[in-house]
Image (cartoon, rainbow, N blue to C red; front, side):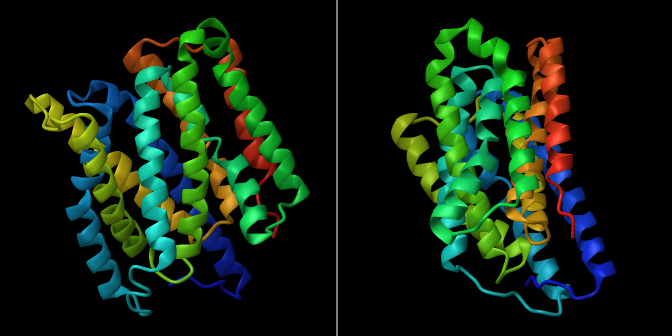
Length: 298
């Protein structure tokens, strides 16, 4: 379970661990859009498999973590954990569809607009007020993200449906941040990640079967892509995100995850042939500046 350490050195160490985990989470999740396009199943089926195949790893992590933790397992199947699973299911359903309907840069940027929704929902639901530097950092990050996708947004109106799905993804991702942040106050990162994944796969399996029908990959390469999604993007990405949210402010964490949009654009250039323009490079630099401005001062 999480608590705020009184020792300033311990707080600094916790912040460093949390920031490192969040950056690593952004890197781990940034390759997932390209992997979704390589999968030989539908987007909803790939969303299901990326979570389902990671369960053994997450279960082993949870057992090892709680065996070594002095505080025990914490709260199991709490309301925030259940809400985390539902929010993540909505996030993946919309994001995987968006990836197939628009560019990877667009889908990832709109998905990582979570900081805006974290601030909005945090105020509406919990009356959380963001600091001035956080709001300035948020504005910079959104401006940089806009520059990152400006070219593709202006050139191809056919991406509008995919972009709309991406915006929906960002809403669910913002709710996911808030729910996981609440869950981490009573449970460890491993338990939160494992239990919310169980909730997620129930929703994703039902959606994939009803909408797509056949959910099995046809080739060994297809299975390899799904295992990469499961181990790197879900077990690695979501697990590290849960670790970070127990140590960092929720709004700042959601800003750091915008690095996913920057790195995903790079992977799309390398793996999918989607070019990165000078304007997009400037946008990525502005995102980095926004994260720096929004960093916690205490």
